[in-house]
Image (cartoon, rainbow, N blue to C red):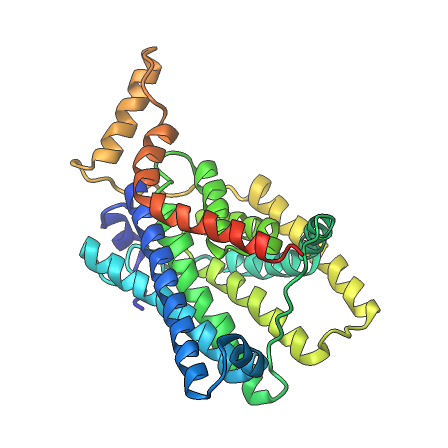
Length: 344
């Protein structure tokens, strides 16, 4: 991964909504292929041990290797998606994603928001889960076997570092940038929606949407995805650390203290970002032959003259949905399947 100066980023070809849709579909397809490979390997191991698939899964379900293989397969699919997209667009891997040095204040803001999201808005999951339980939803039981230090340190890399880098490169890097020519607000909200639907995790949908929106807002304000990488890492790393330290028995006083401190941190950081941060997002230089840029500019002119040309948002959505259709279809079907599977 190579860090570049901001003025060098501005000279590169801007990501379009078509690119956003393309990388999303490539990522989902890559994840789907990785899932099939994961199941196939487990099926082969079950056969080699003379067990049925379900019996074999039950026997290894609490093992470190099972979860490590699962998460590493997922990260490998994300990396593969980045490499395939880079090859298709003929760019260097991780370029165009926004790996530039941000101002120090955005790192502090990222840390504050991470605490707020995890400790205060993490309860959003429980509220949504309570709602789903009215319809017979049963929370899936998933534990990370990190009883030893070496397992805990391994999880920090497997569950915190790799997903933070790869997912932020895709979602706050390539995908968000494809919507910025239409509307910054739209790019932030759309980024949150795509982030939550991509994970196909029913019970965490509201929380993942909120995380996606906040991550995208910080990336937009800072002009870099490094703060969102840090936020993503902290969200996963703090969860692992608390699980390692307390398991399911965190002291109540500490629990409520973390919620209160997290809430204050979140409110202060968001108020500053929305009302006091006067930094203007730098507009990237657009190539003269860029079809998307040209159509947006023409849309603005025609709107001023009173014609009924499509708005920049509508012009952006058309190519995006065309190229992201496959990815969205797979994610929505998987989300529904996850919901039905856990309803008793």
